[in-house]
Image (cartoon, rainbow, N blue to C red; front, side):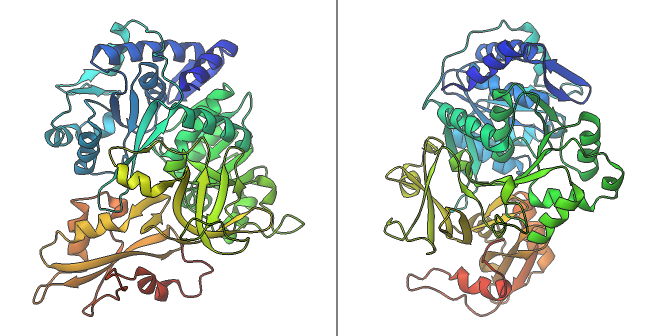
Length: 519
C-alpha cells in the first residue's frame, strides 16, 4: 500500500485529464507526476534521506499537492504545519520532529527567519511562492527545473508517511505519525463514502494542512479527479470558485458553511454544480443544516467524524440520513456509523464494551489507526490499547450502530473546527506575571460551536484586565487558541479527590439546557 501508487495510476489511466487548478495554473495528471518525480529528486539532492521529515508552511495551492506526493515519493515524510501557529509553535514542531527542510510560500516568507532562529537544526529554506525569492532561500521552481526525475523510493505499508501535530494535554503539541497504509486505506474508504468517481471536481476551500482536507488528496487522486484550490477560505472567494470551476464536491466545516450561507453573494451565485457538501471537525446545529438544504437544494450533505489519530474518519452520517422526516429521520444529531474499514466500540473505564444506549468512551480499531505519537511512547500506550484507539470522546451507540456524542473526556475544546487543548492555553496564561492559576473551558458559541473561555485567579494584590490576558496569549500561541472571553474569580476552583480541577463543574452553568456537553 503506497501513496505513490495512486498517483501513478491516475497518470496512467487519465494522463491528459486536468489534475490540479490553482489561480491561472493548471496541469494534467501526466504533468503532475513528472513534477513530483523531479521535486522528489530535488529534495534528495538537498539532503532528504529515507524517513526524513520535510516541513511545509503554506496556504492552499497546487504546489501543496506536489509536496504531498513528492516527499513520500523521495522516501521522506511530510510535515504540513498549521498556518495559524505562532513562529514559536512552528519552531517547536520542527525541533521536535528534527526537520531540516522547510518550504514556505509568500504568506509565510517573513515568518521563516524567526522560526529558523528558534529551530537550530533547520538547514534549508525553500520558497514556493510567486513573488521574489527572499535572500537565503532556494526557489521552488528553480530546484525542480534543475533536478532529474527519480524513481519512487518504494516506501509503503507501515513506513512513516507524515507527522501531523495536534494540541497536547501537557501544553505542547504532539506529532501523530501516519503511515502509507493509513492514507491508502483511508483514501479508498473515503472515496467510497464520499461518492467520488471519475470526473469528480473537488474544491479545496478548507485549509490543506488540516487532516480533514488532506483526506481528499488520496480520495480524489484514486479516481483521477480534479483538485481545484483557492489560497484560503473566504465566503466570497469560495462562491466565486464554485461558479468558475463548477466543483462537484466540497468540504465546509460548520462555521465555514454558515459564513457562506450568510454571504449576500450566495443569492447571485450559481451553485448548481455541487453534488455533495461534506462537513465535519465539529457538529452542526439542525437549524443550520435545514438552512443548508434550502440554500443548496441540489446538493446532498454528509457528516464525517474522526480525529487525526484515525487519518482521520471513523464514522460517517450518510447523505440519506440528512432528512427531517420519513423513516430515516431522527439521526441528524448523530455522528453516523462506522466507515467500511473500522470497528467501533463504546467501552467503560476498564475497556469492557457497553450495551447499546449506555454512555462510555468511543474506541476505534482498523488499518487507519495511527502508528503512534512521535517520540512519545508513554502517551501512545495510553491512547492505543490492545489495538484500539481511545478517542477521548464520550457517547453511546444506538441499536442501528449510530454513534451519538455526549461529552469529551479529553480536556479539549473544538472551536471552529480546530482542536484546542486547554492545557496549552493555561500554560500561556500562566506565564502572565499577575496570574496565580487558571482553568480554560469550552462554552457554547453560535458561531464557533465552542468558544475558548478562561477562568482566571490573580495573585494577591496583582491586577490585570481581560484584554491584557488576551494580548499576552496572542504573543505565545495561535489566535484560535486564545481566550475569546476571560472571567476573573477569587474563590478556588472545585477539585476532585485527586486534586484535579473539576472542569465538568465549571462548564455546567454555561451548558445548562444543552442536549450534550460538547458543541
